[in-house]
Image (cartoon, rainbow, N blue to C red; front, side):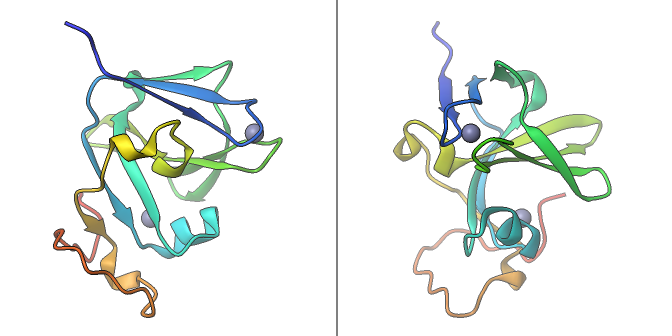
Length: 135
Ligand SMILES: [Zn+2]
Ligand SMILES: [Zn+2]
């Protein structure tokens, strides 16, 4: 059996990652912190356990955006790469889909923090919309 491998990295190439196996989930986040971290109106992410993700050659720099929640980025080019935190004792890494080598391989399954979205953002999908994150 071949395990799915998802690869990506930052704009300058200093930081690369591989994620092994299937993600736990995927979605769009509309929270203000994700907007600030990325400069984008929303973020598409895929969730993995930290154990599934290998960083090459090393993990990105991180900023603690709220207690226990970290935002990974490349110190050289500034690409925002991750949200990281702990859920039910498991360390999670959300990879930003925009940094995948093949972002078309995944599609988001839901919206989180939908109540914080920018109201000019028009969405015509039928995905479930949650006002808070799934916790
Ligand atoms: Zn970089
Ligand atoms: Zn968010």
